[in-house]
Image (tube, rainbow, N blue to C red; front, side, top):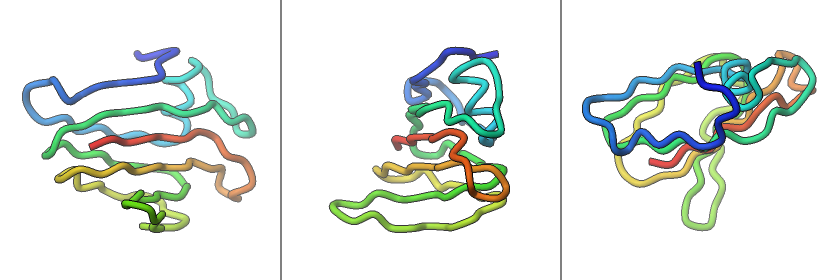
Length: 109
């Protein structure tokens, strides 16, 4: 169980990484606990091409381009992320009413 982690680097691993996480999981990795109202901060994760990330729960996924922030999906319940190429994504996990930011996931590929 990861706890008090701020950065996870899967880029040096052999084989394919398949990570499935939601806001509560991100909170647990950052602080060791979950909260329905508190923002736990930012978890920074680095993947390689071919790895997959499945995001659960509610939130917003943004793909950051050269100088433009593109909204990839809004109010998602689940999505799969293709990690081919060089990209930076931000997943803002929120409660079901979208009133509280629970955690952010910064994804480097």
